[in-house]
Image: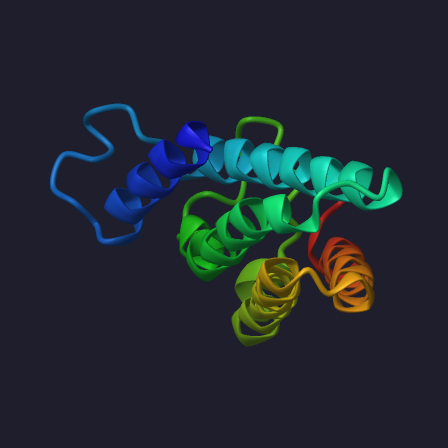
Amino acid sequence: MKKTLVLLGLTALVAAGAPGARAQGVDPIEMRQVGMDLVAGDYTGIRAIVAAKGDLKTLEGPAKAIQRFATVYPSLFPKGTETGHDTKAKPEIWSDSAGFQKASAAMGDAAGKLAVAARAGDESGVTAAVKEIGDACGACHRGYRAR
C-alpha cells in the first residue's frame, strides 16, 4: 500500500507538470509501467482473497488504489512517449484519446464499485465488481496495448 501511495504521489507530480519532475528522473513511461504492475499485483491479490473466501473488507484499500490510479493513468501518455522502455502502448492511445480516457475511467468506476461492495462485505457485489474490473482491463488491452 505504501508503494502505491508513493507511486500516486510521483504520478501526480508528473501529471501536474511539476517543475523539475523530469529533471529528477521521473519518466512517464516508467511510471505507467510500474503503476500497471502495481495494479496487476493488487488485482491478483483481490482475486486470490475472493477465491479463498477471505475477508472481503480487506479489499477496500487495493480497490481504492486501483480507482485512484485509473484517474491519473491517461496523463502518463504525453506526446513524445510513444516509444521507449519497451512500451506496448498502441498509437490509438494518442489518436483516440477520448476512447482511452473512457477505458481508463471504466476500470476506475469498476474499482470504485469494488471498494463500496468490499466495505459492505457484499460478496455478490464484490464478485460482480471483480469481473467488471477484469472486463475493463481486457477491453483496454485489446484496444490500446500491443501484444
